[in-house]
Length: 279
View (tube, rainbow, N blue to C red):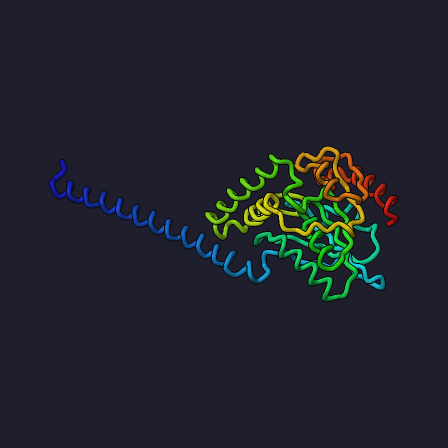
């Protein structure tokens, strides 16, 4: 038999439990907000202005007596070591891999890094870019007269098929919001791709950048050649040929930028291009 004291004690305990749960939810909300806020401050307040959402330039082979440095810039969620294996040993000069970082991706910042590095060392620069990597090539060609080789190039969003452009912008925007909500957890590499795993922060920046790229100089005078894919699901090859008018173009029997799984097709297209341009 319960006394009035038991009933009061039970009611008091219940109220205490509810208050504890409310305090716990508030604390969790505060922690999540703090996580998002501090990440945004670091990402957009500091890293954006300190060059930390660019790339790491990894010198694999020095330029040597030729003075030529070949900069390899991979495409969407890829890294250069694996993406350029089909051709990296075929060009005279040194090798620098332009490696993406998981803190984020600012392609203009990456272009500035490559240009500054070439100027600092007095290199005869040559930039080989795949997909959005060709954005760096356009800036380098415009600023320092670099020779360039374009593979499935997308230096400007106008070269995307319309659906791909809209999907990149919308998907990138949603991913950016997701990265803010996740805060510091968005830096954890989780998405496996060519050359390693990538973070949500990086993927969000790069996808959004692909869909909004529109400020690269239209410089193609020193573009040695272009390799397109005859089954490219993202780019408009007609627009690419118009953009690179007068530049030799070869086609690989492949889907977009698949230089690893379809390496033989790219090797064949690259060999044909080399024969045309005399490299």
